[in-house]
Length: 130
Ligand code: SF4
Ligand code: SF4
Figure 1 (cartoon, rainbow, N blue to C red):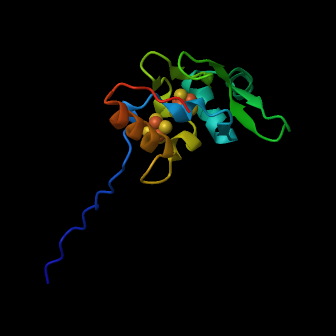
Figure 2: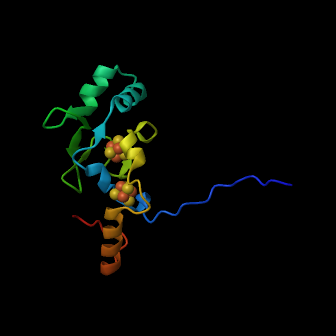
């Protein structure tokens, strides 16, 4: 019997990061783990300790490390690695695991909200603030 090669079934996503102002990159707590810091250290040819200090900070309880922020042009603040003009990640190939996994679903809550507001106001470029 001839066996045919399995092919991947495409999974449809209902969000478009290329049409979004990178809202998820403005979340206050973007948690990183040791492997994420090590990856960023390699990306910038730094030591682990240098990368940890430059790119991360502890949360209020000192239990986890989070990506540092800086003031953003649209939202209050954003991850320090966000290109604020292009609204794109500047370390995409070396981004932390949490950024790779997000939104971990076929839908993105912010994108649903953004799409709704754009349709309501007839403006495809609208940036919806929360
Ligand atoms: S908020 Fe949603 S649509 Fe926007 S960049 Fe993040 S995952 Fe993509
Ligand atoms: S590392 Fe990149 S993808 Fe992750 S929050 Fe920062 S800008 Fe966004």
